[in-house]
Amino acid sequence: MRAKTKMIHGGVTGDEQTGAVSVPIYQVSTYEQNSAGKPRGYEYSRTGNPTRHALESVVADLENGKSGFAFSSGMAAITSVMMLFESGDHVVMTDDVYGGTYRLMTNVLNRFNLEHDYVDTSIAGGVEAAIQPNTKALYIETPTNPLLKITDITKMAELAKKHDLLLIVDNTFATPYWQQPLDLGADIVLHSATKYIGGHSDVVAGLLAVSSSDLAERIHFIQNSAGGVLGPQDSWLLMRGIKTLGIRMEAVERNTAKLAEFLQNHEKVSTVYYPGLPAHEGHEVARRQATGFGGMISFDAGSGEEAEKVLSRVAYYTLAESLGAVESLISIPAKMTHASIPKDRREELGIADGLIRVSVGIEDADDLIEDMEQALK
Ligand SMILES: *Cc1c(COP(=O)(O)O)cnc(C)c1O
Image (cartoon, rainbow, N blue to C red):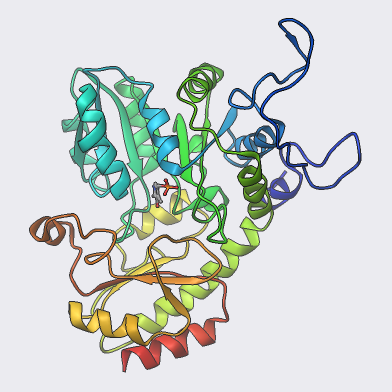
């Protein structure tokens, strides 16, 4: 089954009993047992719920994993993955990971002595040097936010194998439609399903898939113990989102390629960051490991003031954090998502004050370009 067919026919589809084509929303917490200790399959909805199960099974299919798991947010999924480790363990991480992941590691899990180091994983050379005797995992994000840096997943998988580490990939920006990290040797792939997988700015959720039944057992134990599960309504919304993920990603990418070309040729724009552009540092690796370049694009408008002017003038780009929705979203990382990072550190990372990030939606590309043109005037 190819990806777009899996989105419709993968996992559990419909309802056998009634023939309903859509999976029912099992709004239920507990299940009647045949006799004491003899449940009919489900016993309590933290442990398992049929609607959530249907979502989890389609996620496993999309990522070519053994099992999938759904959580109440991307951060709940990431926290659960980190619960695989013990006090004193060490994780090597991509240096420009999502801000919430950074905060979890530096301000929460540090209290449990889970050690970590950040390295630029887009340069494979530096990663091996950061591996210590207590290192248990490589945690990468590719592409990253907001500069769309690309890490070579296959190279990371080789390193992980050599040093007996788990390879964990945050695949939020690429989506399983464009990139399947488990096929490239990763052990765990995870998503903020709040973004492209949900796709309509109406649900907060996290998903993950694992490559082995051993990991599936350990993650299910943590999911059931820590309890950050996704409810049945939100599980249903994600399944609905997944049905159009393929066609949405194709529409988003067509729009993004056109906007990238427009921005590249605009005199007021100095640098455009988009992995689909041959000039982008990660272009070759992105081409090799993914079938699409996605819908995130950043560009330098020159200064913080210029960037603010653009944001105040656009009509079809909603000024908001988050990404991956049908509507185009626009933000200034230095003032919004990355405001908590000190200015020198931001500059080191290449996040200029005038950098504008766009999550391209599925509006008509000509409207998006005309709107950006008038805003840049
Ligand atoms: C949004 C995001 C997260 C966190 O997900 P939530 O659903 O907001 O908890 C993690 N990683 C990336 C790359 C994200 O964009």
